[in-house]
Image (cartoon, rainbow, N blue to C red; front, side, top):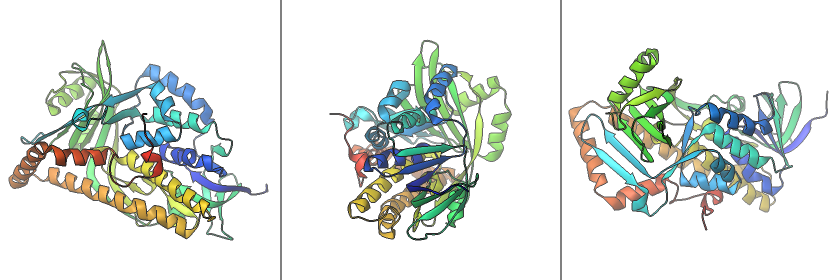
Length: 421
């Protein structure tokens, strides 16, 4: 049996949130190990992304806020991301397909260059992988899974891999997604329930220019979002997220390309003209999840391992990146005081800062979902009047969108760093 490895921090999961945490923590000199069950060398990922970009768009995209852009800039990933393929959006158009309610958000009204960027997930990951290549104190172990996780012994946890190797660390971080096995091993309970929606994601080509606008129509079955990707001479490309009932999603997935395009055109009220083509479609169920607590001695859960929400506001990945940035804050502050990365005091600071914000966002998304699901004519009238009233109150509307962009409120240090001189 080989000697156990030693690390300061073990991060389980080499997704966007886990790698952001590693990149943000690396300047401290901490010995960081990332565990990833996928095979292969992540240094080859950039070449793979370049090859895939020639083949089309990744159906999985994220609407990255300005705060997320600042975090990714601070950890050294944004320049790589920007040099690949991103799509800034300068406006948002939201309306109730069952009434007259409408809200328009504009970067110009806020005196900001953009509201955010639509970025393919594989492009963001590629940028993060390139960012961590410069750090000798980050080790990425691929093709491995965690098979056991001990309690704290002498200030460390023992992580046992499926190949029998062991790693002793002050802190183990679960960043391995919504069905996190690491969180389950730690015995952290969850609140969770089914939204009653399935989300269809794909890329479509539209007849008309997407106008660098993120569009969202609330239908009787759920929200339909068109997110701008690129404009070419052949047409305009958008990523769509269509949240609808499971039965409707099944019907939509069963349609051929022509019928799906026509159905999508109607559902979107032909705001961007004809739907000229559609890529392969994927569908997944939507569930609300929230860990009852994020931490234990020597353990923390971040990103989807700690919480998932409805995609109607596109905040999922942004919340995860804020988790990573806030955990970096807490760990670095504790480190300056001579405290262990796994100490209760350090981790409680992280939980205190993030849990309330995440719960508030979860409650807000749940309220929106219920409001637009309600077919009652009175509820429909109230929500339409409310949307139109809000659209006519620029100070209130702009305060809401600034908060959503991460340009107001409490922010971790990585998110505060300026993105332009």
